[in-house]
Image 1 (tube, rainbow, N blue to C red):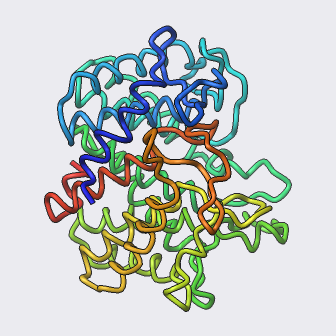
Image 2: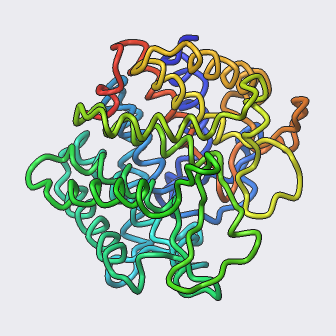
Length: 379
């Protein structure tokens, strides 16, 4: 598989052609198979995610002017959608007026890494200023016991594994700004510690729980039993990246444990565990993003540990995903398919799908296959 070619000829061109909002800034990511826009509402997560994607493409893959131009257009939208105090909504109108807010601070997290990567590409001082501002807003919420968990205000207050995993990734990409990296290193260490010691890892059951109750809270049965395979794969390769960055075998061992706990007893049935990752599983269809996380996670594990079992698993995921999700005619991936490969929806972008998981996996695979290490991706 030529990951570089697939990224630059099938994935990024789709979004460049159909989704960059030249009129208002940002990205219009709710598009059908051919790239026709069916809703102009914007998920602010994808302002940061798309900015990060095109900036990494420029910084790591090739300094194409169209990537930098896309970054400039996407970045300009932050002037329109940023709320007082530096907070960001979850969704907004095409023009930037807030539609929905959420207690989760993922919008600020993705804004921070997007602006950080754009600063590295452009040296635009405003991008650096915003990267640090959005990070500080996010970090203050994370450090505050009253707001650290987005689920703390619910009837069943709990901490969330996926949040810690995202904090680790954010810290990794803020560190490469250079300068004073102490707060970024502090976040990486805290998130890593919480993932390993916060009660999520159940060695007795060989599984990773998504939700852990706060204090004396009693979780609903659904929440208590809930496991998100995609988050386990995602967390595993972030942890392995940290182990590689710090050359720390104990961190590598934790990342390996996460992947081992994600493998079913019968390795041949691996694909069956990567379903929707949704809170209430109403069907047994597969969605695109956990496939991406599994592909890079197990390939990275094979790269580090040399265990052929990981390569076999990675190849199974890759074969399944590129056979059933990849659109050979129009580019990019479909969102969802049945276990036998029938596409459920032909839309390429939704309120929760845009240019991020797939190109990020391809960035990682480019780093592994072209340099023999994940460190190029992390520069």
